[in-house]
Image: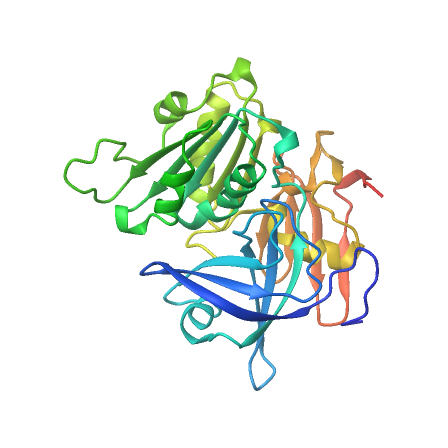
Length: 248
Length: 85
């Protein structure tokens, strides 16, 4: 049924690369033009499919980084050394090249300004991507929902979107970093893995009923979810997106 | 803890392919412990097929095996599936 548009049914579409931004040595943002893109909600993802000459296919999911009213689709992709798909996307793909994708996908790990807050976003590494779509959507809508981003990365050079986050902070958005492996001289923020104490310092208390979104490697998200439950937050208010041991 | 564990979101595309509606916001009731929750919050394990487990009691909610043109879906672990139409 490929190519047959049925209501609700996902179909593979050709997406053309129209721009690329190097975010960190390992991470690139790829901007695609997708004809007829219906728009998306912050936190949704797309499936990307690559087909080799011999017919072998590899499929991966990537979070959408762009804000929800964007007509183009920006994916921020981390290159995994032993990856099947990410090295091709980040190193081989050139403007004008086309890939197959389908989406937008998912309705659970999604935030819209009308959902309100306080909002707490907890990112591990490239887990920042769907949370950045929420922050961008919030900013573009002129929304001032109380929002706390706790973003864990190995080093300062591994922080994605750092300049933009600096620009967007204030107006109800607090950005807090923790660097787990190395930090520059004079670094005044956290320098350890996210733990219960850190979360209690960054997030509003349970009686304020904050909404949590956490995305990152599975062990990271597990630790965050466990700590939040330990702090008395409701399980239903904690939405998670785990992407396995190494990233997608 | 299993480092390979994912969430219902991870199979959102496959589920939408099979059911033709967005399924991560569908609410499933576990046939074992009776807890209900969105499919997006289920624990997902990928192997030869895909296994969805209840985040409360670890019961197997669903098993999905897919080929290029067919899918086999075992839903015996879900008592009720509430889908928004």
